[in-house]
Length: 600
Image 1 (cartoon, rainbow, N blue to C red):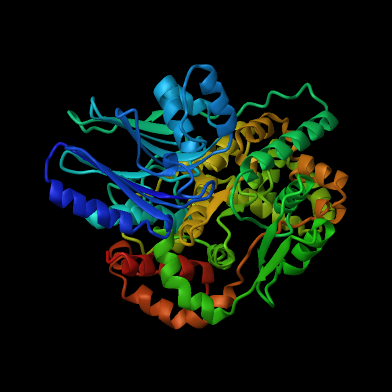
Image 2: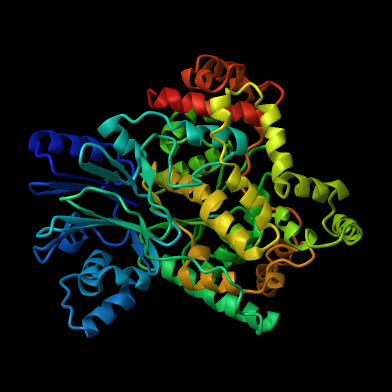
């Protein structure tokens, strides 16, 4: 976890540019509390705030960044290369000579030797800047899923880039982007495109890169990686694939947990985190497990998480059950809003924020989570639409009846899923009615095509993957985790998104992941074999959830924020009735609080 920032400009104002870069870096101090470095030439300034998670800062000069390579290139990057040991050996076999053991030098040597083709060899997470000094050419790139963030803005023949948006805000004070805000209000949309909530501030999405020449500062985004969503393992039996899943899971956990300083795991007692905890203990790792819950909440994971921990923990392992009171959440809402940088739909984001805060106090620098498993393994109940939508009406009703018994859920629940997620026109009509006080010019900003594509995707697994993982769901979850971890100097890692494991899961036949509404079928089988039968048989999804009553005491302050919001006045001629709709109130106050924290 680091924060990078840079400026490439054809205009030469060295003193002003140097001062600006330092202000941009200061906004990344929480991400990188351990060291700061700057490199400059006539046209380019780049800096980095570093978090040391692999080696001590004085063990080798190659860990210092920005990294000057062969006096020809400058590398500044954020992330981790999990297979850096293997890549180092490959590069050495090609004649590359190393002066350190660090993954930073592996990245520099690889880019120098292979060019951008080296990115496809990397098994890891990264956001990088690579500058050719002689040609004055800048390359920016991010990993295949966009786990590590990189934002940019072009203004007056100058490109500014940084890990976090707040670093760019101090550079150019951008205006709000009403396209993003309107779709957030209407459809809960976050991070659904390269646009951000700030006008003319863009994000590189998963697998993307740009190359910028000082002679022509023009952005043309390209893909160095495009995910393939086809299912190609249909010839393998379910039992064979379970064994392969176990092998690849173990490898992913090994790669993401080796050579790191003190690490933790977010243990919710759900399927994903329980499997990761089991995998860590299988390789005899010392584990610092963290869970978070709310007394009186409808779903408090702390007791079940402790049972999973006790099943495999050794004497050196440590379990922390994070708890908090309503007034603590309310007191930290402003900082949470500033940390997240853009409005967010779900108050449970605070649960993760709180867990990261406590973990950091215990010295944790790396946190493993089950992020990505729900999307890859079809873990949400609404994914049952993949099975029900192709059926005739009679067979569909029989299917829903069967599921209501099997899942101990209301028969109507599955009918509601279909109306909510697979009927774009109905959904659009519903939100239009709810937000009927929105100005017409703002309502026209609704990205209807995205929601039509979402509805149609439930008829096809490949389309569903593309929407959920690249557009509608996973990107915002990765943002939550990255910003919450970054706020306390913790790097988040996601074993289910490791290259080989993710590709394997994607290629599995649909019924190895979802069958008769049993979600995550292959994972449940592996958990059962591991002795975690109670976890494997869970019927409801478990995660860090935040009940609405926790922030009810702040309704007066929230209502004041909403009524005084200039941005909301520009969106609505008449605000929707949010007093009886807690989640709508949360969204409105999230915009109003974000407006306040960023002086918009």
